[in-house]
Image (cartoon, rainbow, N blue to C red):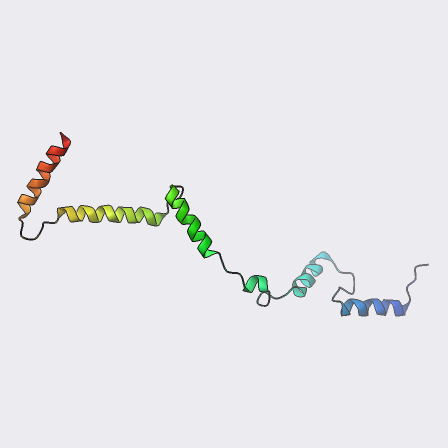
Length: 116
């Protein structure tokens, strides 16, 4: 005879309420909601609040990968392109007090001597 007395039922409900358990049998969907509400809120959870991304370690790792040539980001390609374009622009400029034609002539003679 597995008849449960009224007193035992009420005590089981009361103990479930006290210890934060589900007092009556519920389906899976309702249990999910109960689980969400029983967890700590995100603003009070120390794992969520006190977490900071490891910027220093990531920066060091990316620097070492770049030094070994295993990673090359977009920024490094843009920097190289800007350096080469600025060097090309500087080569076309004349020095103060010199004429442009004589400067160009020196470049041509220099190129002819290098190519031989």
